[in-house]
Length: 97
Image (cartoon, rainbow, N blue to C red; front, side):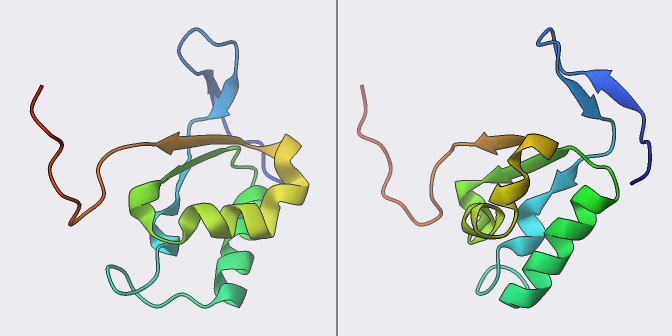
């Protein structure tokens, strides 16, 4: 594990690595490149093994949330997970008001 520089995340007291991992790469097809389950597992463990402790994901990132849960939930104490919410691509617009 490499000692990466950290900074406090807002005023939370959390020391997050300045280099985070954006899990959009794990989304898979059709909106991303094909990433096999074995590749996803390798990538996620490599992220943690490199000392990165901040992982960013979103429901818009396809399979990324599922893959994070499947492959590194056993290492949950090693990282902070930021999951954003938003609107699904192709979803009907929200009603006015």
